[in-house]
Length: 320
Length: 247
Image (cartoon, rainbow over the protein chains, first blue to last red):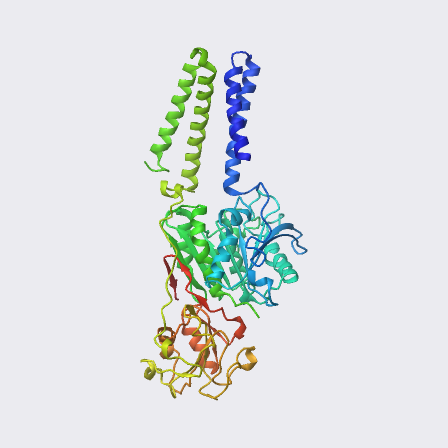
């Protein structure tokens, strides 16, 4: 709808400019030009927002998409006492969650920047992907948490605790797990927890897994980076919040990493290869290569199911 | 012409400039069609300007490095390879299996390993199972099934069946070494449907078990973890071109 409206505005302002030019004086003509420019900028912004889902429009289907016995996608609000952040989160509950009393492994799926979890839901169709992989037996039923990572949509935290800023890392590694343990039947041991993400979310997944190996057993990176590319405020973007630096200078933890990238995604491919080259035991590494597709949702759609399958094979099973 | 190449950006910028000049030229022409001509001219300049800027941004950020990428063509398909049957799949039965792989002699064991399969092994022909490798020796080979479904407290009780996992019990001797056993996972993967990149729980003879875990490819084996921490038995995953780096 916003696309139609914004394009209509461009059309209308162009027509008004054309019709009103001869009748207006200098001030009026300037106003017409500015109006046209603004409409074009607005139309571009709408399209960029459509791509990134930074400011999502329209309601998300949060009811059971797979029928009364199928999986569910819930919208919740996580009030984090540790981080003092209160942010929305989507929760995927597999169909198996409806029956029985078992406890399930958990995957935190992180979004890119700029962006929101809506990209997972709309562009990557995460619910139907998970349903399909679980139904095919390639993945065990798991709970997937899709949290927001920043209280300000255009503030890039890279899932770190920004100096004098939002404590995103604490929110994602303390508050979100605590919320899940309180509200859902989840496994509470490290073996049952994993991370994934695309783009900046992929960096987050790698960085958080390396920083919290006692909490996460595995992480899958879809077009990630070796460094955050922001100033954390304490210099840690060059050291402890820099997976490349961590792999070279700190003992490597006994976790499993899956690094996927597109061959023509220059920065991600270079960083992923650099990370892969630095890995040594006990850290276990699997790499995945998409021939081309750049840094786009088409690539992440291609990686999504293989990454979830791999995660399931490296996380503990559901507890009966 | 490459999507991120300078020639395309220059071409688009030139077209934008030309459209601007043409707009100025037609602005006072067109007669009765003047409003329509002006509107089209303005829209053309706007579209070309946006396209030029978008090409510049895309060249800088490399979101879509090629026309293929722009079309969403990744040139890659994730494939679920068919899980091959184990060599012994046709011969497995309810009881324990005495396993005699070709490499057995090189392992210097007191006897052939005993293998217990999950109850539903035959009913799940497409799945690969995690493994419990028990180095405690042959122990009580007559032990019944279902004894290995609890935590580590049940370790070291000899041959047992583990729910949803293949249990292999071997009897090491003084000459059995971890390096000699390095090909055991591959040999078992050849004979039975088991995971060979992750999901091995190694229990029993502490120094040898620890050495086996240390010698195994990274991520394959864990020393004495709760059976409930094993991954599930799964069908062959969707895979992209990939490699496992074993360090």
